[in-house]
Image (cartoon, rainbow over all chains, first blue to last red; front, side, top):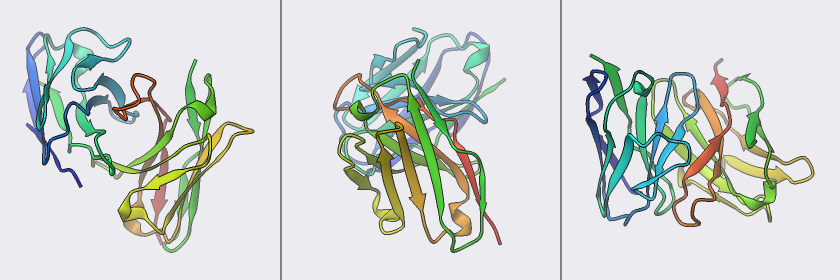
Length: 107
Length: 122
């Protein structure tokens, strides 16, 4: 199975901050990497697919980059509605594994 | 609009089985794979497998092999996930999700059900 390691596991930030979350995989997955946002009590919401493509309807302050084993999700200017938990997910091979999550909290 | 609506919460005893449904609307049910994930309380997401509603083909995660069965009923656009021999550590929210039409490669999930809480307790 492909192991996913996200860092940090949590962070505190202020509105307007630039936030970066990292996801590392245990083997190369090309660009088969997706990012989700999850709010408490809700299902995950797709933000980025194919490592860097913005899902329709997602604000442009979200961006993704990376290839191979190292990937990054960036929020360019954190908004109040962005406080949530973020997960990476590999779609390279089954089982399709997820990172353990990064909780973004209000400073 | 695309929607996936799941069945309601369940409470089961250890050793029992549970069947969760996922009714699709707003798109052609047979055109998109349905995946199932689960999330234990306070934990991350765990992929369980997929079903191809067009032909009933399935692929299960090794850890659930022998306990999980995924089926579909195209006449009512509904997918099902059946988990047997339940244990206390199967307590989780179970989600169905549709693979997006963004690409046939990335296995990204663009629409999710609202989740079904399954509690396993004696």
